[in-house]
Image (cartoon, rainbow, N blue to C red; front, side, top):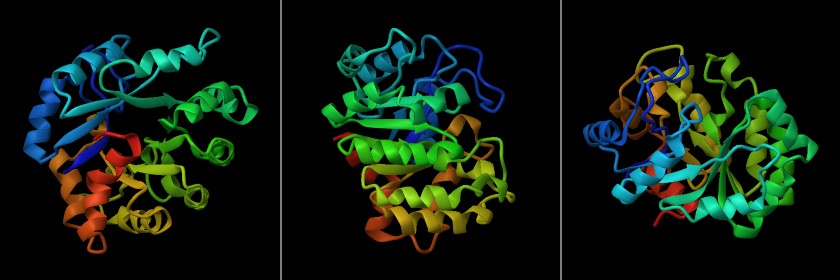
Length: 267
């Protein structure tokens, strides 16, 4: 079974410039998934569409065998632990995912301003995805150490979506160091966007091998963030299934879907 560890579904007409498809609905995604041989996808509702959270619930109701959700809510002054339970009660909701790339948000990781959230996730033993940039990786490691029951997923190998190799992975040592925390996993999502060459994006393969060697097949998850890729969904699949000779057998099965299903509890 092939499971994409991160896509965004939304119905509005707008999107950030690097997401070139707008909107991206479940019907379109299902057609694209069938063409690419993708069985399931983890939907991270688009933060740029105010209706994306409600749409995620409807999509999960209609297609529970194809879509599950890592949802979000505004981390504003009104946010508290009650929102965690309210969100997890929604159909298809398996965990949470937050965009913490902006400095004013990311600073709250190191300052302890989000400790209530980590503690809530820890008490419930739920997965939490994070879009976080390299300067804050050490702080993420500190959080993981203090809240060992929470399962973290780091988006896109912590790569800035606007950077190319080698600058895109200047932080690789810091990312690999986090592998010592057993409750941290990484999404190998959006990988073609940092490549300096065309399919099969050989410029990225050594990076993938280093991440695999550090995290293992149980904690490195294939995915796409497909709406910002300049390749096809099928190419994003075969890049892993056909072009990485060291990724075979059970390891391939885990990386391509089984491991993320286990991590987020998608049975």
